[in-house]
Amino acid sequence: MNRVLATITLLGLVAAASGSAQTARQPDPCVAGPIPALTTELRELREDLGQSTLTRMRLELAMARMQVQQERVLHLDSQRDAIAGRRAQREDERANLASQLAQFSTVLDAADTVPPEDLRQIQQMLKEQKSRLAQLDVSIQQLRNDETDAQAALADGQALLNSINAGLTDLERSLGR
Image (cartoon, rainbow, N blue to C red; front, side):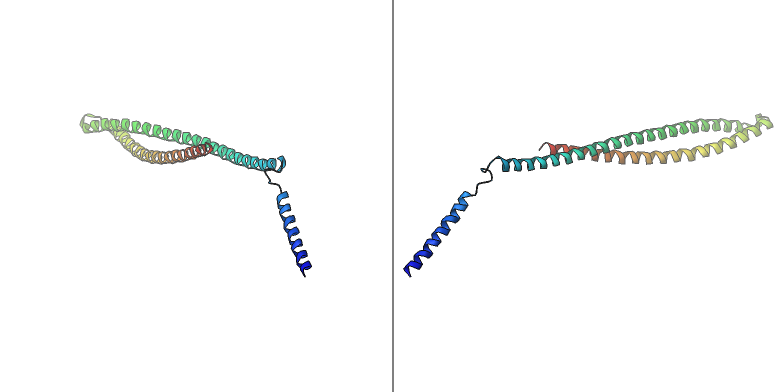
C-alpha cells in the first residue's frame, strides 16, 4: 500500500511539474516577437485610417453644404435688394403721380376759368391717374409683402449658414484633440 501511495504521489508531482512547465513555456504576446506587435500596430493604424477617412468625409460634406448655403444666402440677398429697388421705384412713381393729381385738383378748383373741353380732358386724366394710383398702392403693398418674405428667407438662410459654420468649428475642435 505504501508503494501505491508513493506512486500516486509521484504521478501527482509529475503532473503538477508538467503543468507549471507548460505555463512557463507560454510566451508573453509582447515579448514573443515582432510579428504579434506588428499585427497589433497594423490593426491600430487601420482603425486610425478609418477614423481619418470618416473625419475627412464629414469635413468635405460640411464644406460643400457651407458653400451651397453661402450661394443661397447671396441669391436671397440679391432677390431682397431687387424687390426693395422695385418697391422704391413704385413709391417714387406714386409720389410723382400724387403730385400731378394735386395739380389737377387745383386746376379743377378753378373750373370756372378752364374751357369746358379742357375741363373734360382734365377730369378724364384725373380719373385715369386715380386708377393708376390705386394700382400702384396695390403693387407697393405686394412688394412690401414680398420684401418681408425675402427678408425672412434671408434670415433663415443666414441662420442655417451660421449653424453649418458652428458644426465646422466643432469638427475643427474635435480634430485638435
